[in-house]
Image (cartoon, rainbow, N blue to C red; front, side, top):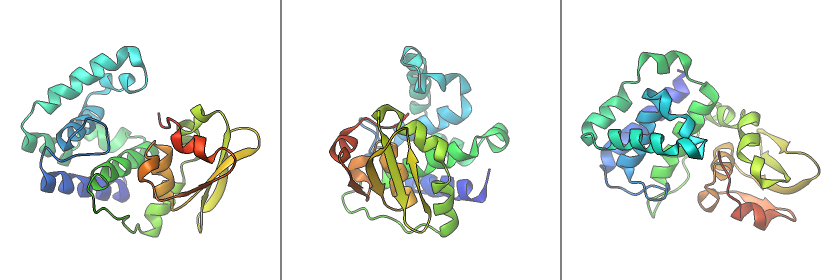
Length: 203
């Protein structure tokens, strides 16, 4: 586990501790306790992962998550603070950082007075360096999208001529691609900009 992932994990856990189990998140219908249970299940119960992608298996995934949700909140957060040994050695680093960052922002941006947080350059570079992830997140749009992060780079995802351009900081672009369009500070231009803002994005 890299220092960036570890730092983001600790920051989210600290925020979850401060807010308590009933605070809202950007994940529809989920409180902070629900989100914490999701993170613990994802990390400790590999058998629950397929249901995040395959609808037929989603029932099992939700049962596992609810099992953790029923734990005492302090116990749940203790599990987050102490990742299992296999999480330290087998985690897919690229996706893990994205997961912690996006869910940290799911909690932060559910507050009415939220503001974007400045990210260190290495953090921004790590969030930007995810071409395969952003391609997967935007796959269902059906058209090519250009992503531009000033000072970091520019890439076009998808085949054919670009139909929309998303411009912003790497973290904001990643949030947009994960389906948080309404809460990402980005500029979207192009003939399919409106369609992209309404699209169901994410995995």
